[in-house]
Amino acid sequence: MGIISQIRRGVAAIRQLRGTPLPEGEPELAAFSAAIPVGPSGAPLWQIDVQVTTEPHADGERLRLRARIQTNLASALKPALGAPVALSDSRALTLAERTGSLVQRTANRVLNLPAVRTFAEPLLNNDFNTFIEVQASTASLDAGAGELIPQSDKLAALGIQPRRAGDQPVAETWSGQAADGFAQVSLLQIDKRHLPPGLAQRLGDKPFQLAAAIVNTAQQK
Image 1 (cartoon, rainbow, N blue to C red):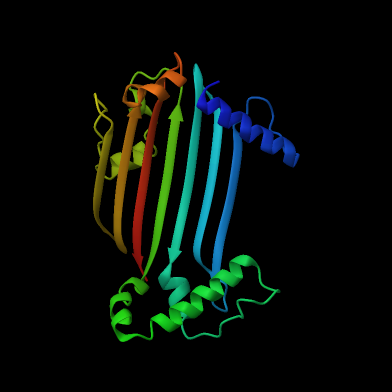
Image 2: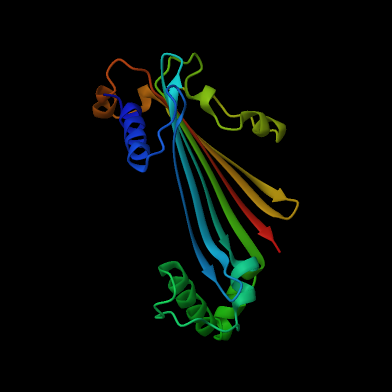
């Protein structure tokens, strides 16, 4: 059984256990989110959202993973500095809330040190975001991993033209100033011939290709 098939069956099994099966032929979906709130407003200091879908793709299958990771220093942590802190050992608080209270108390204590405050002040004016999208397929694709590059139309609009993978995997990075901060785009392309022999053998005769995009941004607030 192929790797993507195993993941697809696992996602389907989870949905069956939850009592939310999808109609036959529809993409299987699994998703989760987590956050650490901080300060009286409960704004998320850190948050992650993940979505995984698997579906038939031509003569194979495709897996798509999307994730967003937020670290909100400017919009969450900075306003919380000096604000009242909830007791982190209170049983009325969730684990995430207790963690947020602990982070808030620690930040208040550490940032009272002048040297640390001087170093941290520029960071506290920014929110950081990481967007990740990974696509993998066992379909027969003429252009290999190049056909799976996420958001290729938007990348082209930014002037980003990824190279095609040759005998080696392709890893490329672009970076520059954005309207409200800084942005970095990284791309990875892997075809079956780039895999270790043992892993490639596990895939049998099936093709395999994977493309991943990672976008990091720093937004000044």
